[in-house]
Length: 541
Image (tube, rainbow, N blue to C red):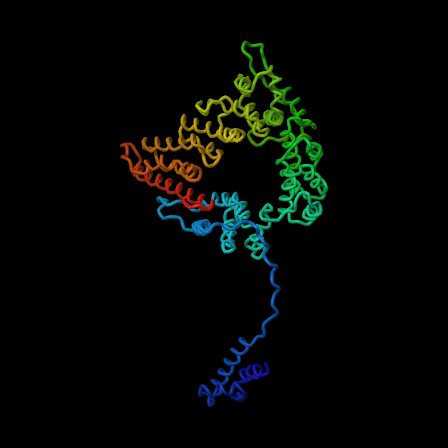
């Protein structure tokens, strides 16, 4: 540093007033460049040499402490073929979209990744360490991938996420994926994690304990309930949906007095899903006082007298007093009462009639839509398959004339209460009767892969649309859904459709080529899905 200060001083004063003195390496540099007789050049040469020495001669700072070792993951490693496939899917996720807007006949790897992750997790595999960064990047980019991606990443993925701020989402919202939760019988471990764990870990812990011992889970929640933040209380309360039973009623009744409106509303919704609860009984009394059977005018009909006020009791039981824009107050209150009342109360109210006959009754004064919509919400909330069937009606009936509802969104929710097989049969009959233009929402609630009757109905409807010269791009959504949901066994039926058929005179220009390309892509995607399943099962195809 003394030599550097001397050089700086010489530069400030000027080499005429203070010529640089040869010293050690500095004089060697000057002599080596032949600049000993030129003081300014000698000064610059010496400064250059000292600059390099100062930069290269810094002493290293103290080493940062090493992170804790990554935790062990005792799950099975992926088979080699499946490991290679994961790399291709993760690379395909970031591949640029094809130019021109047409996808060609190549499968969309990004859309196959969620299904691959789900099957890999079903087999209980762990992600290879080398794939963890790309897997976390994929989960960061797509929230729909996060649960499955973080489950496959496991504890090592969460460990790695703690070292990179861009992956911190995994620690906040993993829902406990990959975290080694204590056993429900380990009182000390459960208590420690409940008191000290991250919020996502606590939610996962509550779900784990509830699955094995609902009473213990409720006790855990009750122990810290008053100290939790309102938004946390809401999330914890929502987790009670799994395994909800009459044993939860006392706690939920107390939550009706919570200071948070959202917590009160959720507690009321959960109680209404318990048909034997006191709240359900109170709602039934209010609802049946508003809806009755009128036999004074020939055939029986349903008459409705909506509430004239929202009293304190209704408010405490979760009725929201102010309707959204465009809704009348009385119809808004009526809908909330009917959807919260146990559906069993209507059989008695209407003289022992079954749901099909009740739904078929005429409703006076244009109250039919409001009443049936509330019954739809009640059937979904209470998971009542008999009422769902009645409100769905025949799949062959035109959507606008169904017995219970004409909304496809409501029908999709009702279908979710039926068994997988019954749901597939109903949607298959709907597709056969009405085609695919109205069926997209309904197809989305069917179990994957689609059962054979449903898959066959979809393929037949696509074939009919192609032969009719329909505008092909309007079916791109259904095609994308079919690529993910059709069973690979449908491939032989589809292969005959991959050739380009003659276009009708009134067909859209280029429709035949698009349809052929789309069916080729569908076939290649189904074959790829079959190979994926075989690779994950550890067998050759």
